[in-house]
Length: 294
Image (cartoon, rainbow, N blue to C red):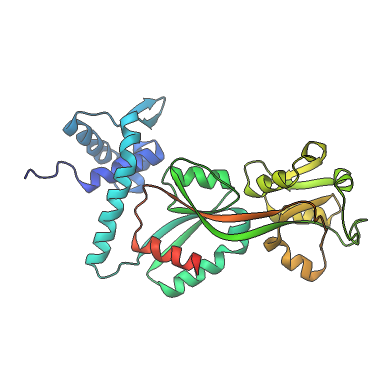
């Protein structure tokens, strides 16, 4: 049987270049010289008579063949790293790059990371917070090992797993004219100034679904990327908001904000775990998923 004609180092250079679209940055991430990384990539292409990248200006973009090979290379390198860890007697080690949307990152993920570190002190989690669309793109491009997202997502390369139920809540200041109303009508909703999350966020997606039929009649006064900024704007009397109940519990407890009752609108939603379909599930990733599901 003939020997393997490529090295794991060549795969590392290939994948790092795919991620950064630049050989110099790829080399820096692997603690290599630029010439060594460039030579490794060139040798891999010449060995098989292929072209893995197309040069677009100053960037190196994956060729069609490169895009096809990337998932298999990611999976193979993941398996090699897991094998190396097992040889050392430590399966649950290393660092996972985890993405989380704002609500999850601010109110749920920290407790999960603390529990994971308690169970597995030799492993670590690096948390990246962004909106659902951004997290999905980064998991699809293998920049993140997995994501925790709000709202619905359909992506051909991603596996979406139900995690837990959640619900949005309309809210205002205690002094708002509708604060004591037992039921707020659609007509009253149309008269409010709304402070909401930006397009692309899972919270905005659920809000728009819940307001189907009257959405075009709502006065969207502010679109903000941060949950706390929306709460502060509502507290300042700039309008009413709509966020996950998880993010509002402390404010409701303190009495700085109050829920508004809109029973005719469905604000329920699901939170999901997302992974690339071709992602190798290392022992560290499997244990992290166990903590999330506990």
